[in-house]
Length: 493
Image (tube, rainbow, N blue to C red; front, side, top):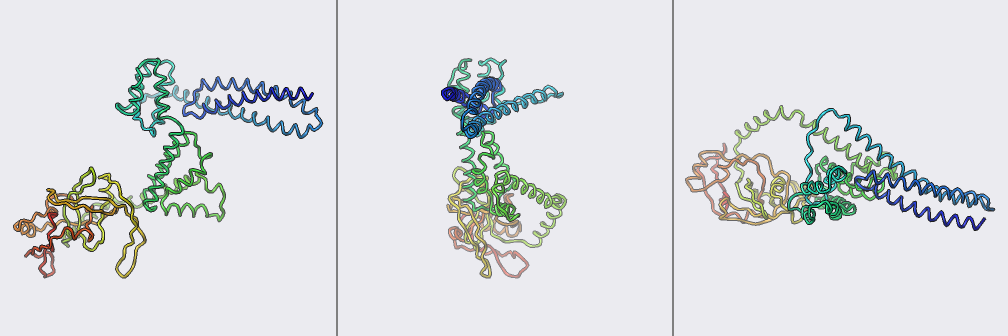
């Protein structure tokens, strides 16, 4: 009997090896973005046959084990080992059945549709691996269509890539024949559709968001936009098989590191609200649910703040214009040409000798697509010896010139969301006429730019002062003192 048991176990080992190989093929097919149901059907038949033979052998082994002296312990160990294969078989069959049901419901829905949809334009692939999933999810319908010959599929593939792109170079390297179609598809998938490559791209995107957040000092950001970006990357990873259940412990710290400080504090506060900390309280799903609620709350707050803005905007404009008419500001402002590498913009600046640094608005930074040199931490000293909390500014190199480029100056500026409020241009005709008689072109008076997007502070202003003084006879306000332009900047006004 011992010899028979040994022979049966040897036979069972072969059956188990064959079962494991087939199960691995099914797992690989299920991990694909678009599993082929035909292939899965074949694999299911194969694994059912292998499992049936394994079960027959297992039953014979169990009968022999029960006849041995230490039957209880030996049977329990052998039973637990056999149950692993049974559970794996049931799991794979269930997953395949779910795919069948999903495919069947999709077909039923399309058959019941009573209206005509517009034609879907074929998405063109440019060779950027980030866009491969969306491209392939659409093109695979053509790829899996058995009624379309391969030579026609090749022509569709040529139309589905952006001309002169990396993807086009790969496809066009094969002659457009039926035999080369599958080779071209395989090469595209090898170059741009490898799972581990796409996973690395999306994980690196998350890491870049972490580094950006660290560079800006966890400053306040657009939370809805941040949430949408995070959701997009997590969904992309899930489509590649990196689900929250399996990789949440790895992804959760990355997402937390992308959050602004006030959001992260709120997350920790909500998590500790019950005064207990469990493993489940730090899951990625819990974190994304919290962010979703925060976004909903912020949108409701914005709605409450702006709900009546349209009705009151005209009234505020009237009050603003009345205020401007009552007080003519003589703040030094000018129109200049601003250059960064490869970009140029005409902007309005204000000169402020009371500011120790020069600043540029984030609006202009975005328009110029400028890249920062570094990030600096600034603490502002206020009147009375008070100091502000540390703020973080990106540093950009700029070159400022007058409009005809006869004078220019290069220096570094700090980023700031808003430079200042509204500063009216000098529109007093007496002042402008006197400036004209003195052959002074005041650029701030004949252009329509009104918004201040640049501030030249004391760190740069000294380079622009000539030391010359021009006195004007015209009174600029109701105070009875004679005043005028304190200085003339080198060609800037």
